[in-house]
Image (tube, rainbow, N blue to C red; front, side, top):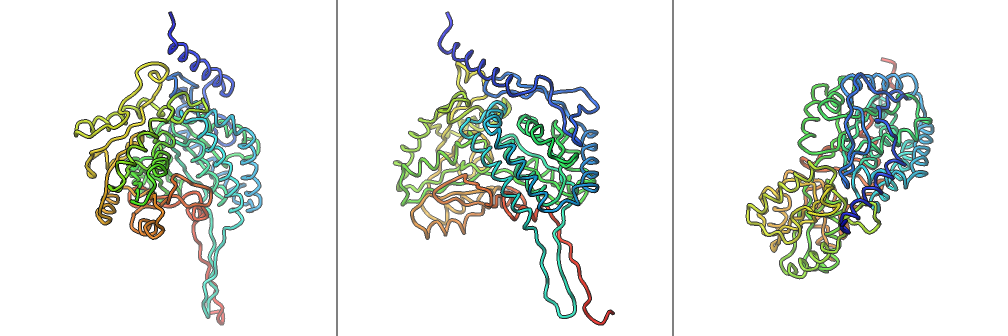
Length: 506
C-alpha cells in the first residue's frame, strides 16, 4: 500500500518534471558566443540538478579554454567594431529593452530559478523584480558617466571615464540571474562588452534569458560560456586580454581570482564571503527582534553572503528573545519551493548539504547546544532532496570555527553580550566584513554601532534590503569594490586625464 508520504513525493516529482518540460529545452544547453549557440570543441556535458527532487533538469555543455578564448575574441571584435561607437542613449535603450524582456516573462524566470536553485517561489519572484529594476537603474546611469575639470592657471585639465573594453564576469549560484544582472547592467552601461560564466550548479536562467534578448543584442556584446571553475572560470579570470574581472563567490576562490588577475595586472571587483553579526540591543522588543533575526538568517535558506549568521543578544532580554526566536524558527515551513507557503527550500546541492552538516558536527563535537534542527529530513520528498533543517546553535565560543567561518546554510549561531566594547570586539573578530545589523529604538546606539562595526553594509531594524542604487560590498576579506549603484560605474571604467597648455604655446 502506498503511503501518504510516497504519494506526496510522486506528486511533487511529477510537478517539477512537468514544469521543467514546459520551460526548458530538451537538448543540452549550449554556450552563447558572438550571437551564436555553440557546443565548442568537445561534446562533454554535465547535468543541472533539481535540488528539490534530485532529478536531472537538463544537460549543459562543458566549456574549456578554447571556448573562453573564442568568447574573448568575439567580445573584443564587438567592442572595437560596434559597441565602442554606441552613445549613452543607445546603451540606455538596450538596457531598457533587456528589462522589458525579463519583466514580460517574470513568472517563468522565477519558476526556472526555483527548479535550478531550490529557492522558494516567493523569494524567486523578488529576485526577478530586483533584476528588472537594476537593468532600469543602470539604463538611467548610462547617461551620467561624467569626467571633471581640474582648476589651473596655465593648463586646462579634464578627465574622461572610459570603458575597459572587455570584462570577464563570474557569478554564483545563490542568486543566479539577479547577480548576473548586477554585473551585466553596469558593465554594458559603461560601454564594455562581456564574457560571463554562470555557476555550474545554476546556469539555466541566464542561458534562457540570453535566448530572450539575442535578437536585440549586437553579436559578441554579451557572451556566456558554461562549465566548471578550473576549465572555464580560471582561463577567463587569468586571460591576458581581459583587463577587468568581476567575481562573486567564496573568499577562498576570490583569493585565487585575485592572484590570477595579478599576473595580467587586471582590475578586479570581488564580492566574497561573510559572517555578519546581528546585534540585539537591550531596548529591542524581543518579538520584533526575533522576526528580523529570522529574516536575516533564513532568507534564501541561509545561502546568502550577507546573512545575519551571528546573533549577539543583550543578556537582559536574552531569555525572552530566545523563546521568541525559537518559536519563529519553528513556524518556518520547509518543503517544495514551488508552494507559496514554503519559507525554506533545499540547499543547492548535495555538496552544500555535506558542508553544512560538517559545521553542525563541529558544533556538536565542541559540546555546543543544538536548540533546534541540526540534521536532514529522513522521509518523504525532503529526504530525497537537499534539505537541511533550520538550525540554531548556542553555547559556542565566539572564536570557534562555527562562529567565525562562513557556513552558507540555514545555521544560526547565538551569542550573548553585556559590555559594549567587548561585544564590538567579538563582532569584528572575523576575517569578513560584508554586512551587519542592529535592532534598537535608540538612534544614538544605532549610529554608534554603524560607526564601530567594520562592515560595508549596516542595516538598522531591517536586514538584507538591497534596492538598486544602494552600494553593496565588503570590508576586509569580504571583497573589493561596490555593486548595485552609481559607484559601480567607476568599477567598470578607467580615468583618462587630458592636459592642455593654455600658455604661449610652449
